[in-house]
Image 1: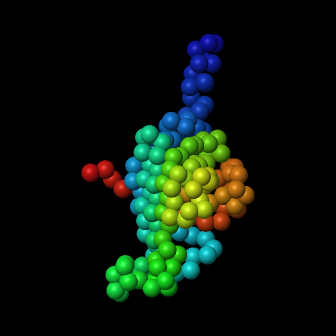
Image 2: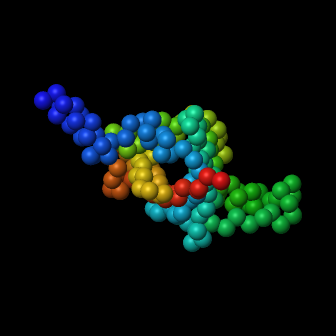
Image 3: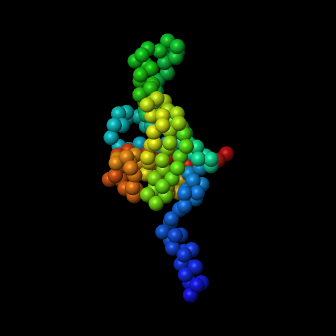
Length: 165
């Protein structure tokens, strides 16, 4: 009887795909290339590109460009306010640490630095879905998190793992 109980204890979590926070962190570690962004407020028809990186020490960094980002015609030093505003508006970047809420399928980015100064110190809550080489991060609509469901989110970013060299 004890052997049966022990067997069930070991098999039940595996059957439901339950990952502990350390198991999830190992799956996240690496570099991911942005494949797509779905949701409202996607103002450009051009394909977005970017990269998100997670390391084994609990740090992360992300860079996203939404659409075409033309070079400054006269160089950065002579760029107009309009040219600088456009470059700023279509670029997102931040870094910090990250933690998991595996029960609710949430990863939380704790911002230590950001292109947008007002974001420093905030937590970006993302639902996640990890399937093979694809990672989907969805912006929590309620700001709190919960079970991954597209009805609870607004924007979905799909990433593909970049193989290690």
